[in-house]
Length: 280
Image 1: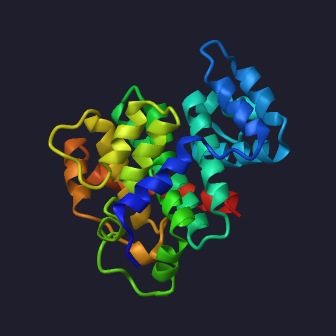
Image 2: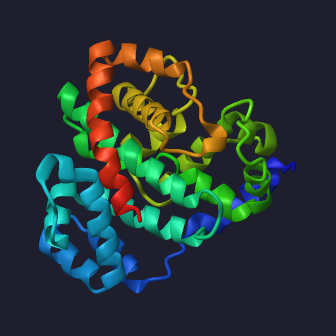
């Protein structure tokens, strides 16, 4: 299929308001926007919706149990994950719920959670102060794909009809050829629209082809490494099972050698079984 860039821009305008079906999600996002809100207030808001509370607990355990042990309450999840990550989970839940039933959406969610986990592992290993931001950026980095799932389902129907055949190029290159923009560009626009800070939206924009001068170079390269490692582990769409050359450059920029890579991969692998179980 082909699509006009103007058509993409027109459809993107529909997303200026977050399509929130649940009033609890809407109220929770509003509560998180307050500068004086407490952990307990956010937890109480989320607990008004049992399904949402369960989603928060499942995601929190998949992201943190290797660091902290099992999480049993929403309040504990909010305290451990932080407001930015909870907001990221809510935003992801809203957008991905719109695309339930689309081919690949469950794989996309599993991939995003694994990228989030690996990004946190790397940030902690390197002693970066923005561990929560790395975790949240990992969770949201592919949110632009949901736009394509929702607005151009025939595009992904073509992709997934190919079956077990691998694509000849990465998904973002095919998106650019088809739509004029890729999911990283769309994701950046959505995150800006929904009030996410630049430290989250900017690295998403440059996930696949970063320029020499980056506003958040370390976080961008952490995200690149986490994305590529998750794909290498099998967390991603099998039709676009690529590990790109950009991985080696990002590892070098972060000062991560072969032993670091193996240790990060081993820790991520130790978490993958739990992530698969919690995704059932």
